[in-house]
Image (cartoon, rainbow, N blue to C red; front, top):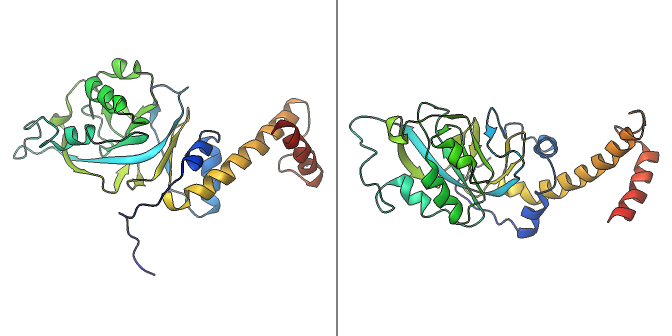
Length: 244
């Protein structure tokens, strides 16, 4: 079996991305598990604005531990500093993903850089580290996820090393172009090669579960309803026709 090309980009249509706005991360996880992908949910991240939905393709930044002979504070511009370069390169609809190694001993970035990322049209920001200026970042009102808060600037703990390479964020491999979906529970990574089929089937599963929930709320037993038997599926087909 050939070694996978982690840098390969796969086209993901606007229609596929639109479908991801409906299903929960839990529903998407079920569809990924059916396809053998069990390591996709980013654990222990906090949504700063849990009511906001995140859908976008990954733009990645990798931090290494800061070391005194590599001064990460030098060249704080978009031409020489890797972090600042990424801030000025991230594109519309992309999710700025920071691999901070789970280190919350300093902020991954502050309010001004976060505001610039969103002004460029990014769909959101995800880090497995901390933010500084966290109240201001929350006030931006965007789908933003982190592991903690810390007032120290990023260069006290992090050295910006690479952009747009596969990274590890909250224990999950993220390749540039993978689809990230976030809700009030957290963030899940959908490998771009299977995004279209996962989006289609997750949206269908979400619709079925909406119908099942209505039955439960009306007093139905889970027997024959969850999972649905033939009678329930027939009733669902009629319900679906009425609600489409």
